[in-house]
Structures are given as structure tokens and as C-alpha cells.
Image (cartoon, rainbow, N blue to C red; front, side, top):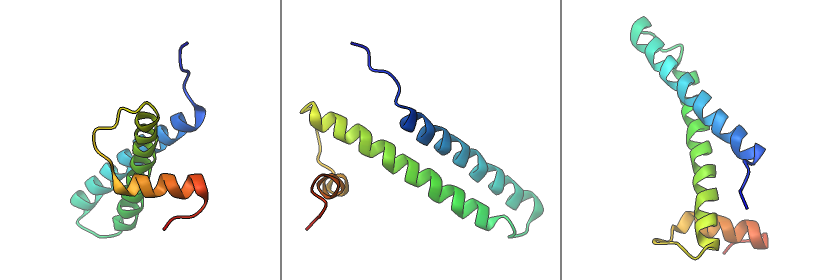
Length: 90
């Protein structure tokens, strides 16, 4: 059976793409204007992009773990998975 796109995953992906474009636009404005008025936009968009990448990476990690296809265990994702499954972590 074909697996369809999850709307939440599509939204997170679109946010990541938009945040990356805003980051590069802020960088271009910083370079052209030689002023620091766009540094806040740059930092926030980079944080949003990084957060979206972590979320998407977690989804891939969990899918591979459920299929018993993991090559390397990633401690942060293991801790996060345990936290989300049991409600508490060590």
C-alpha cells in the first residue's frame, strides 16, 4: 500500500524551505547594506530552519528504527524518543 504525505510533514518542510530563503535574503541584505539591522531576522530564520531539520531528522530516525534498519544510534534522538514515549527521560 502506498504511503501518502502527512500534512504536518509537508507543513514542516515548507517552513524549512521558507526559513532557509529568508536566511539567505537576510544575509544578502546584510552584505549589501553593510548594516546589522537584519541580523535578528537571520538568527531567527536560521533557528527555525535548524529546528525543522531536527524534526524531520527525528521522523526519519524513528521510521528506520521501527523497520530495524538503523546503522548508527543517535543519542539525542534516542533520548527524545524515550521522552515522547514514556513522558520522562533519565
